[in-house]
Amino acid sequence: MKHLLKMLDLSKEEIVDILNLADQLKYEQKHGIKHHHLAGKTLGMIFQKASTRTRVSFEVGMFQLGGHALFLSSNDLQIGRGEPVQDTARVLSRYLDAIMIRTFEQKEVEDLAEYGNIPIINGLTDFSHPCQVLADLMTIREYKGRLEGLKMCYIGDGNNMANSLIVGCLKMGMTVSFACPEQYRPSQEVLDFASEFDCFTLTTDVMEASEKADVLITDVWASMGQEGEALQRRKAFEGYQINEKVLSVAKSDAMVQHCLPAHREEEISGETFEAHADEIFDEAENRLHAQKAVMVKLMSK
Ligand code: CP
Ligand code: NVA
Figure 1 (cartoon, rainbow, N blue to C red):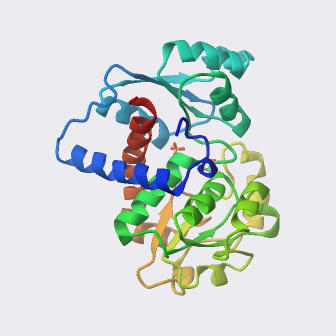
Figure 2: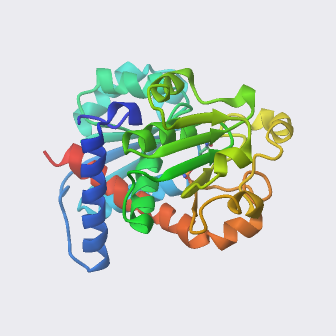
């Protein structure tokens, strides 16, 4: 593994390796065992979109690994004034040991990887959010003791989270049911991948999708960059909500995950959010541990 660009690039073995290392690093951190695997290394973090969790967890993670993280807002970089990503990649490769980037187009992340010669980590694009899904898989495994054979039901927009969850869960041997309005399906590339699996279903019926689910996951109806469509989306997604009614047909011990930020009473009811807050904030915490594992895998050579 040279980069973390999207879940489609990872094998099951690579995912398992990351999750195992993440569990170990979490244990070590909780027990005060130092793990300065990245002493003297620097991670550059380019942000073209807002972030709370990604920014803080990467920066703290790098510090805990003995390294340093540099916050690079695109407003302050020449990239924001049109310097090509191909040139930025070649320049930053001379200074940094890895780059984490949050941006719009997946192609920009792929270009950084192609033109630079250091590991690139996708910190969210319109197409994918692999760091979040690794943290989700870690959390589900922590709660359920396994991933294989579990049913993950996603309700909502076929966005970056959806694309990455479908691929990550199917690769880990989970059953995936996906409920969304017709016009908000996941990307065709992901649906083509999923069509090879008998255990994948796509429906517009929220109750059907939720039946006997072990894990229910949702995300905002309007992602970053889609603020102008918020009203239209609010109408289109009416009913595509995780709430007590939906949970009543899932397994009695079903867990709920949400990558956050959450919009209560839109994609998730306030009641359900609070009832599952421990699982959701463990998921947020696990961003730190999962990303530390990714950085160690990519940067410690
Ligand atoms: N879930 C997530 O990526 O959160 P941020 O947008 O706050 O980084
Ligand atoms: N789908 C959301 C995820 C935020 C972490 C977005 O892209 O805004």
